[in-house]
Image (cartoon, rainbow, N blue to C red):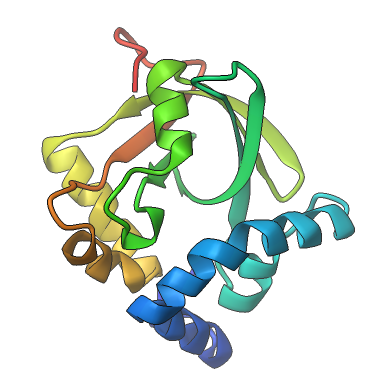
Length: 172
């Protein structure tokens, strides 16, 4: 993935626009349905957010913590070797996204990126590992620098999805 300075001009502009509080609120409402539509129309290969921002957007499937049913939605999934990093920013809102609660209840997840399906087990990061992964996310997507301030008292969770599961504890 291209860092913000390395990305094309139009992609930098979209990422910069998304860093405003107003647009974060707007994207928080329209991003998921538009990404899901483009995902279906593209043969499950891409999303509108990926086209506009130049950042690969993946489809995350979790098990609903209340319903037990599969829940699929677009997320920014940062590759980290064989693993994937997820930032539960929820556009800087004061509450965690639903998928975070789903992974806390059942850490098994499926991620589809560019048509490739992979299965993972999630665990929540802390300390230096969390800080390193969050800093990397900020390099790609400027809104991540503002989200902690907007989120108020909520610390934004960072999760590592590991193929085949972690060695030891398997809960998010």
